Image (cartoon, rainbow, N blue to C red; front, side, top):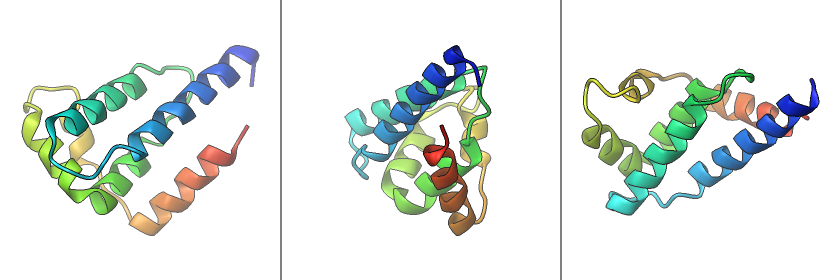
Length: 103
C-alpha cells in the first residue's frame, strides 16, 4: 500500500471510530453526525470500505440511531442503499475488527 493509501486508510479508521461513538438515540444532532460520517466514507475511492459491516453493526447495536436516520433520509438519497444492507452481525464485527487492525 502506498503512502497516500495509508493516510486515507487512517482517515477512514478515524471516521469509522467517530461513527461508533455517536450516541444511540433519535436526537437530530446524532442523526446528522451519522449522515455526515456515512457521506465521508462514501467519498473514499482508493480503499475498499467495510460498508456492509458498518451498517450491519449500526443496525443491530444502535437501533434507535439507525431507525431515526433511516426515517430522515429520502428514497432518492445516495445513503438510502446503505440502509438496505445487512449481514450476520457476528461476522460483520469480526470483519470490521480485521479491517481496523490492518495497517
